[in-house]
Image (cartoon, rainbow, N blue to C red; front, side, top):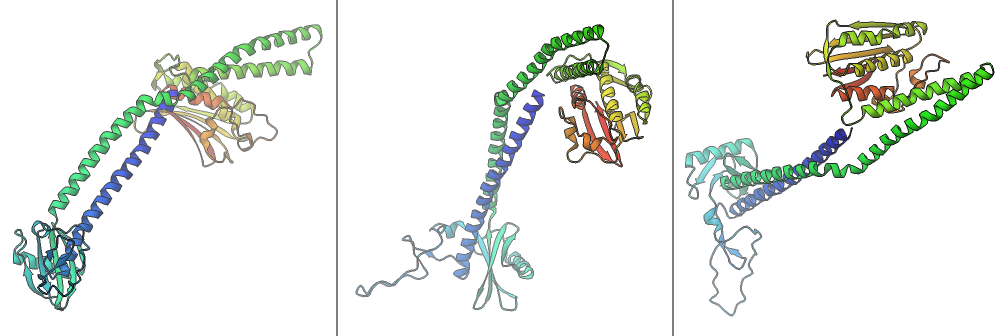
Length: 430
């Protein structure tokens, strides 16, 4: 149980960390891609605004197309428009590789300018331009080029800018961030595994105290029960047995049964329960364990059928498996509908790797909600599972908990489901 709790803690922490890593890496790369594309679009806008070329750069943060005539010092200087594009500097026009396609109002290409790029010829530039005009898009990516369209007095202008360098930078950034994120994730997961025992230590201590309390209380209660039982027998020897002494003896028997099952459950939930693992004929074991309940079912007006495949072998604790069969069969007989049917089946699963033990009983109104609660300690849902009016079901509500502990100690799974008016418990023994 402690190891399962530790594994769950590690898995949950690892999943949460993975989600955070994805969010951080995805967010960083998303911002990087957005900013890179925005810078490219800003440069495309500059070229479009200046009719297919870069303007002259003003080191003071101004841009102009023609040299200013300041020979008349008496006149105030002409107002200049500040450059609104932060990525534009004196080297930008020499670093940016682009070509321009011009088209008239009818969408016919009239001119191309490939003087600022070496990888594209005029005919290729025309093909690029036609592709964009046919698509009707105003911006996007075509091959290695990011493009943007604009309108002029003479028609339409399409500027294509080489973005291979930006794409390579984005890919490298993505690769590096993923590598760093993966390394960090593995490192943190290792730390989680190392310190997980310390994290769940309070729960482990609480569980150990609870288990120790059950064991100590079980042994301590045995003594007063033995004394009460002996005193009751003395009373029956002195005087005749009566309803009071009979009731006392019945409750003593009930308490002894409860203590036995509590101690058995505590033993089964130990990290390494003392099981005797060996190969045995599970077919014979299941049949022998289920057969005695045939008579019990008949006395309650119910029918028990046993369908066990012959000659099946299993490696496990034979005594524990017999106890598992007894618990599930007794539970089915107890909670089956009046005049209902109970079936015990043992067969090989479809994949041939498991031996499935299936115990079912008729149940017209099965329990509502999460059926896994039936395996909880002291959980009973007599109102929904009991169909025989006035019949006392008894039990302590820990039988199925013991069954689950037995199955888990064999590294297997047990489940329950309600379908077609049947309650079906299945132990998949690996």
